[in-house]
Image (cartoon, rainbow, N blue to C red; front, side):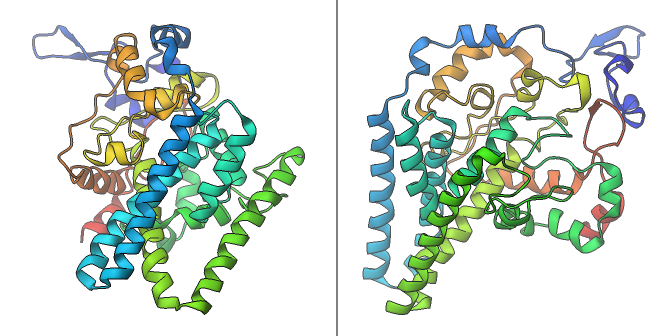
Amino acid sequence: MGSLGVSEDLKDALPVNGGGVAVPDGSVDVEFDPSAPPPFRIAEIRAAIPKHCWVKNPWRSLSYVLRDFIVVASLMAMAVYLDNWVFWSVYWAAQGTMFWAIFVLGHDCGHGSFSDSPLLNSVAGHILHSFILVPYHGWRISHRTHHQNHGNVERDESWVPLNESLYKKLDYSTKFLRFKIPFPLLAYPVYLIWRSPGKNGSHFSPFSDLFQPEERMCIVISTLCWSTMASLLVYLCIVFSPLLVFKLYGVPLLIFVMWLDLVTYLHHHGYDKKVPWYRGKEWNYLRGGLTTIDRDYGIINNIHHDIGTHVIHHLFPQIPHYHLIEATKAAKPVLGKYYREPKKSGLIPFHLIPVLTKSMSEDHYVSDEGEVVFYQTDRDISSKKDA
């Protein structure tokens, strides 16, 4: 494993002899090493996926938009008509989930998997994301950076691990907010404005480090769309009441943010065996993509457009969401043990709560050294959280 540039403090935790682990009788029991270079190429995965899975149907994509907005409008109408606190609690959970579903459709626009038309993708993406106060182009570009550098400690953009040296510079309150639930589940608006620790730039500024000069006009347009939606909400507060707008829109928006942070975090953290992260020459697009994790969300799978089927999405983001399950099934024989089979969910994915809490208590930083690294635990903050 030394040839992979694994950090010294983790070598003892990894299998010996390049993937074997010693057993009492002196023999070697072969154990799969997820950080080893895969014996297949990305072209082999691509070839295994049926050709029709790559076809984008704009009418089908638009039908999902129509479906989701009909549900959103119906829920709002029911909430206003019934106006009792028993239904409000149901409404907030359901509507927040629908806001998350709308985000996923806008996410597809950003990847170009919504349709083959850049204009349709842009128009639909702005409508969908502005509705839930997401700056479409700003997010689209940073998310593209995430996909292009997934699993890379130095260049990834989403829930990227902190290096040990940077982590130790953080004060306790910052660490607490980053790892103490529920605060990490409210991180997305903060990320949009300030990004993550150690990174600079805002998703709203055309002069942010996130963007190239030729992308600045796109950022201006998205920020204007975001501002228009924000202004509309202020107007609705004046015409009706701030409390009604908060109940109809504000609380579901918070639930949506929690869904987004939960799902995106668990796509890259919280597997039974820690997933590797890479630096330098050990990273490549395929190895980084193979660190992602599929999740089963029970009844929510269909509602949020199968975004839990994430490995194939990360490798081939141009595949429409309605083909991801079939594409994954076709690719699994090629992926072999590099595919982490998701645990089956009940009707509601409550099984993911202990997965999240365990990861937040253990996955704090990675070593400054080594080209293949794994999360390490800050025992001080972990013990304080458990106290």
